[in-house]
Length: 241
Ligand SMILES: *Cc1c(COP(=O)(O)O)cnc(C)c1O
Figure 1 (cartoon, helix red, strand yellow):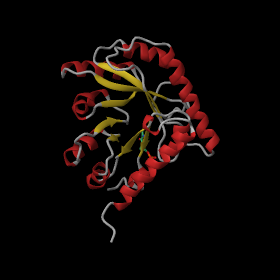
Figure 2 (cartoon, rainbow, N blue to C red):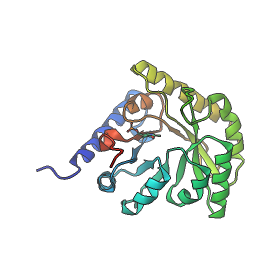
Figure 3 (cartoon, helix red, strand yellow):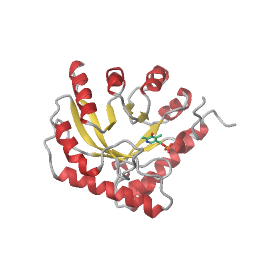
Figure 4 (cartoon, protein in one colour):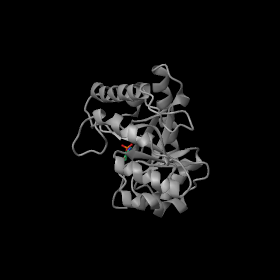
């Protein structure tokens, strides 16, 4: 008989295998790529099935949803990242609930996270979000503005820039998808090469967060170190639930 959430456990196994295959194909080690489960709209029981099966990283988009759900989650040993747009007036509420904010795309947000982190006596890991497809509707800085944002963020005492994040345009062909990811990888290598003093307690910028359910294999082939997978793990999202 099927147990509840067998589908989630099977998906987790398959996604991990596919990440490993793509890594090996690219001459990389599977351990170089971490898997984030994206839990927006997913009921806590379903998330817990994946956590109990060994998922160690989850991402939420909305502050309110995260704060409502987190007490019901089996978070022991699990990192929680905020991956959605963050308003400065929500920074204080969300910081204690997350170990990383992946969606920093303005000096104002960087300064707010730094100041609030100092108030609670910690340094918060952040990623800078890049709008690699230059879509007006999307968050993230354009690549040519990245160095300026990094220089500002790197000088702030309450945050540590750990790398970059991107959500590329939805593209039809595998070739197009790989092109955005390889463009992003170049931006990542280039900005790391500039070696801007990064308040480094840990190894400087080592995270390149890219790849979602539809395209995580291509992202791994092109150098992603963290894929953010929602529907391929938890099934289609139901925003009405
Ligand atoms: C929803 C979301 C994902 C996961 O999307 P899927 O296509 O369901 O894998 C990844 N990253 C961000 C920023 C998201 O908002």
